[in-house]
Amino acid sequence: MGDESKICKSLVLVASPFQGHMTPMLQLGNLLHSKGFSITIAHTKLNSPDPSNHPEFEFLPLYDNFSAIDPSNYFKNFLVKLNDNCKMQLQDHLAKKIKEEKNQMITVIHDNAMYFADEVASNLKLPSIVFRSCSASYMPAYLALPILHAEGKLPIQDSMLQKLVPELHPLRYKDLPFNNTPTELLKQMFALSERIRTPSAIIWNTVDFLEHSMLTKLRQHYQIPIFDIGPLNEMTKCPSTSFLKEDINCISWLDKQAPRSVIYVSLGSLATMDETELAETAWGLANSKQPFLWVVRPGSVNGSEWIEFLPEGFMEEIRGRGHVLKWAPQKKVLAHFAVGGFWSHCGWNSTLESISEGVPMICRPVYGDQCVNSRNLSYTWRVGLELEYLERNLIVDAIRRLLVDDEGKEMRKRAFFMKEKAKNALYKGGSSFKALKDLVQFIQADIDIHSN
Ligand code: UDP
Image (cartoon, rainbow, N blue to C red; front, side):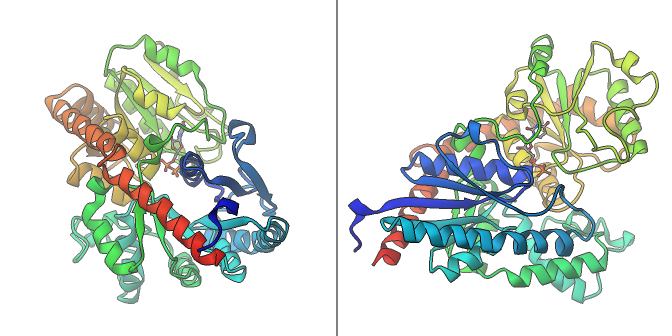
């Protein structure tokens, strides 16, 4: 055994520059800091977190040479280059840290997209763990993609979309991630996956009761420890992690609305829509006659700065009943008594945040794990309505079913039940409580092995 009294337990968390990855990574840092570890957040200059919100962490900026997330040739041009650009900087920093601080035992925990960190840890003989911020249910669907591709089934034919995928119950072909991604991009994605080694352990932002069977499958597949310690948004109280400024005025607007009357609409930090989709969404919201809070992220409508493409007459029509904003304090919004439903793209953080507050959802996924999450919300957990097409009458129908009809009341009851189950997982005897204890022991044991 190493001399533990001399060992400073230091964790270097390597975060990726996506809002939906950065938020849970900072929450993870907060949680592990509360367990006595010192935390360094290594992050790209692109989409840096605000250090003033986290004075307890050390921050290590890595120069990535990007000024924005580049969606063109996303995997090859963006992710691969980002990883290549950051690798030596992290390696040099950690080598120096090891030399200077002899009593420091370091474990690297890295976002799965930042695979260079695993190569660095291996070069420096440091233990490393991967962190996954997507749902567990996404992985079997993702792992099936190369097989479907080899069988010539991708992109999925229209006639197959509603059919169930064998071995992936309850997913239909339309629920598969990247089901309409161009072949070239898919090939780049598979090539990238091959560069990622099997890690020594995985930390997963999920809860056992939500994804028990998937987690069992994944434990069999990977044959390594998987620590399901979510929902991280509830496991720890973390200060704001938003890249964009949160508009808190919406809370006083919500204060004036009737309980459970408002539909909150947000498509997360990356999804975009075109002008026609914007118009259908706008008139669907207006014609529902329900109050709504709608996040239109700057740049989220193709070719626009913000809301200049909103249809004529819309703002007058919704005056007093609708509130449009650039970025919301989403967790506070979902916890507000006036919010009765969440129309979401079903990103995993948004899904967990909605479940944590017992808010039923309208599910309108765009790509990736959102499609899988949407299927689980609407079919498996029955706390969401699937919105198949972005058409104003269908939108009115979905909002009224969720907020006014008995169907919505039943969904709200189930959502409330799930909220209670999620809370139970956090406390002594709960699955996430136990997984966190196991994770802390695992890191400690790794430190002991490496310090001998
Ligand atoms: N979010 C927010 N304000 C908004 C919209 C989103 O704070 O107006 C946060 C939301 O709470 C969530 C994250 O942004 O934590 C989005 O992550 P998610 O996984 O849901 O989707 P992604 O952005 O990765 O597609």
